[in-house]
Image: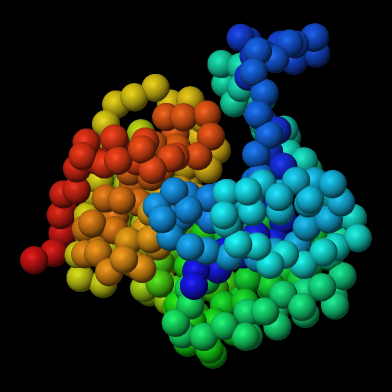
Length: 306
């Protein structure tokens, strides 16, 4: 079973306007409410790829009820831990440019953290864990490392999609892959990335610290996958970018689904990039039909290796 962990879920309230005037009255043309949070997004796209997963994390109040019922209505398993305060509601404003306002999230008590860790300790090497997204301020700063340590001890393969220290603290425990974007790589190593070779060099620094593989998303320029022996670059088709929220999470879902389906590494990478691209071209997350439409237009080129 694949388990996604979202420590700080949200309702993502997406509002589209013809144009956005800060400091003035704006009227939305369309609004959507989605069960959000990076791990939850991964579960939703795994579902589109016919892969079963269980969503773990913390939920509270009526926003938590909305998230749980939304996922279960789509036949996605959940095993959330209840907390006292409300799950956060994040606002995404789409009016020419994208503006996001993310709430901080509820307080998580120590006993609730322990309950989540006990859930992970009950898993086995036949399972797969995805740790993704931000951490509420009330939780320990090293919670990602703690979860990664449990996975390593239990021999549970795991993937990390998070920023800066949240990512780097897991590397000694050897995640199957990590998925930074170009800007995150630049910030991690205080470098400027100008070309593919710069990207590969930075990715290999993450591998030297413990990551088994590194998938770097490059937005409209595609993505690069660096493995122990090879490097691949994905080219993506042109299209109208509607909503980039969840694109990286969709990429993670496509890669993990491919690994679970025992596809070749190139096929996993192609599916991953197709999922991310399909999400960018739609208002919500990619559907199975949208992924199938995109995948034949994604190109994979080996740029290093035999």
